[in-house]
Image (cartoon, rainbow, N blue to C red):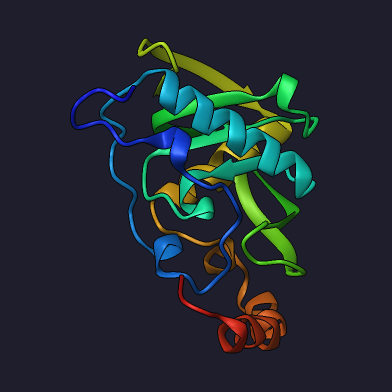
Amino acid sequence: MARPGALAYTAWVVHIVYYPDPVLQRRAAEVEAVGPELAAFAAKMLVCMQEASGVGLAAPQVGRSIRLFVASQTGEPADGMVFLNPRIEPFGPIVELEEGCLSLPGIRADIRRTESVRLAFTDLEGEARTAEFGGLLARIVQHECDHLDGVLFFERMQETDRLRCRPDLLALEEQFQPR
C-alpha cells in the first residue's frame, strides 16, 4: 500500500515514449517518497530497458516526470543500478563517441561528453550516496541526467549532425500521437 501522498508507482505501465512527447522536454520533479512501490517501478524500468536493447533509461522516457534513472552497462536488469535525485559533476577529458536514444529510435550521432563523472544520488533505501564513474557508465549517467533536465541528445550534437538528423526528427514529429 502506498504511503499517503506517495504515487502508486506499481500501477504505472512502463513503455517508452518518443520524441516530441512534452514529458521529454521538461525538468523532472524530485522523488519525495522511497519505498517498495518505487523499487517495483524501477525494476519495471530495468526490464523495459533490456527489452529495448538499451543500457540506460530515465523515468521521463516512460512518461513519468520524476528524477529517477536506471543504468546497466551490460543491458541486463541483474546488473542494473537505480539513481534517484542525482546531482552530477562531470570531470576529465572530453571524449566524442556515438550515442543513440531509446526515445529517438534510429537516430545516432557523435556526442562530446567528459570521460568521468561524480554523482551524488539517493538509493532505493533512501540513503544518500556518492560515486565516481568512468567510460561507458559515465556516458550513460550523463545522457540519463540530461533526460531528467529535459535535454535531448540531439541538442548536444554538432550542427552538421543535427542537420543530417533533421529529417528523422521531423518524421518523429509527424508520427507523434499525444498520450
